[in-house]
Length: 129
Length: 372
Image (cartoon, rainbow over all chains, first blue to last red; front, side):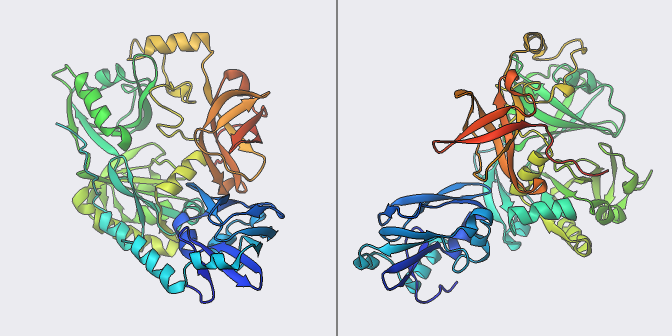
């Protein structure tokens, strides 16, 4: 399963796309597939300051509640309100319409704690064994 | 003889599940498919068309001998002796305190009875039955693990299964609900039962494990024009909850009696005696036991088993089962175990979810009923 280029990935299966000092965060296609049908997403509030790798919300599938962790620190600028009425967007388009929130980056150097597409591919290949 | 070992077992359909890309989880001692394409998609297939289930993990015990009916009536809450040939009937075994030891189905056949128990209770029930069998006219045999069980459930199930059936006395399409027949399905010897656990019409096919893989493939092929899909235990749980059916370990347990679990209709207090009768009589007379009620959440945050239930700020019980209900506009529904006073339909409740209280109200069961 090839990962989209231009994204960074965390061990907790979140992705980050950086545009200037703004990052867009989501969960990976592997994560949505592992979770199964997603029925509820709880996101941080706009204006909230979040810390890299901290727990910032939950995503609930039919069968389980899972914590969401942020791959990057910063201030939450915007959340994807479409997920409130249609959480299955995460299943249909995890890397696109199913984005979770946007954040103004606190420290761009934190990106060094994340993986590129090839390293993330290797991580999930290992998880499959 | 032990019916269950500690090693995770595989049903005769394990290879089929793997080939279909199922996600396998341990359940009742077996590696079972929790989902194939997705729980909601499988749920919808069963409600709209048909689903194919492997239920071979369930315990199948064969009871023979002249004394079976009388003996079973002394151990269960519902009537066994009054069952007609080839009738199926829901029943419950209690402990001495009136709690539920298992909920089961009896099938009365020619010269034998089939007892189907929950997979999670297989070892416990095999011991329970043997410990209480001091009769020379009752013989017990476990077919658990050797026999297979395939269910086809959904509005198109009859069209898919009936043409494959060969029953000497009748047509499978004419089998009444909760009746069964000995016969053949696509040449495979089977007990063909019009039973199920989804709230839909359908069949449960009891066959030998060695015939299971071929019949599974045949049913997928024959069902393909009707839109059949393999369905896992995740969809099955969602379907049974919508249909208001109890699941052992949730609505029923060693602590939750049949009346408390909403199954009082299957307790025949006019039977002369059965295990747990005295305790149940006291419970019913006092009528003060906590009991199962349905609920609907107002918001979108899902509840989970064990979440606290509050009324007027006081904790009064807990959630036992919960799910999104695609058949009810995707509302969050479930069951709670609460005092009698809080079980009237419309009673406002609060469910505590990660520290916040979510508004809910008591709703009547079932949440879903098919058009007949």
